[in-house]
Image (cartoon, rainbow, N blue to C red; front, top):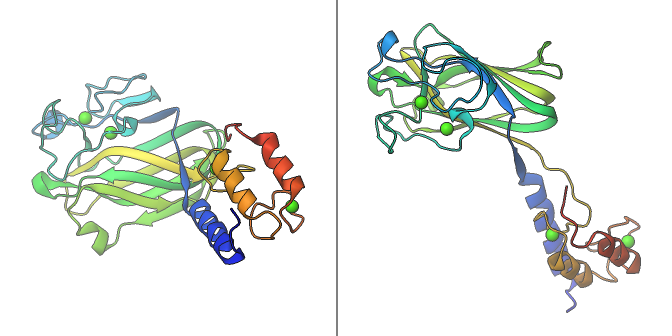
Length: 259
Ligand SMILES: [Ca+2]
Ligand SMILES: [Ca+2]
Ligand SMILES: [Ca+2]
Ligand SMILES: [Ca+2]
């Protein structure tokens, strides 16, 4: 099938748009932080990191947890009503820090990453004096010792007045192995509640993956053949036209998973 040039350029534009928008999820290998608190600090329940698998005592308020992963990265988030029992007990999904105790969390990715966003899942119901963070002071490091390149996020009144539990998305255009985030409490709220933190990195281009789906397969071959003889997509060697050389370049990586 031959596509007319206009259709072919639409295909290319769609591909470029989706490539530009697609952040790739990237997960830390460990995070370090003080454990949440609970009944010893006036809570009705314990808002600990029950799943933390590294060093430290996750049944002691504020104990330093290091070298592991836990509820911040288990993929499970809490609901608007933080007292909802989702099967493991009231407020289990949440980690909460009491007033005057501001957590600093350091994420280690094991290698330098070109970051796009950090996404911090908060409760902001104000029920029981539970809220999101007010400021997020982000800093970055290649060795885990010297942190710099700070970015300061401040939640404005529109953000602070939205009571829904949700991910707060902050752009972090930085390259680093370690990301540190220092949080403080929303004004007037005794507890600061998080249930998940996730990250995206800049999507790496994958040679030959013309439709940006992470595979180099029949769809890409179809795109290339549709543009064959035109200068409208599929020009893998960048010489201005789509021809046998580009077909050869695609066949050379055909079926090879994107890195
Ligand atoms: Ca979680
Ligand atoms: Ca918990
Ligand atoms: Ca593809
Ligand atoms: Ca070419």
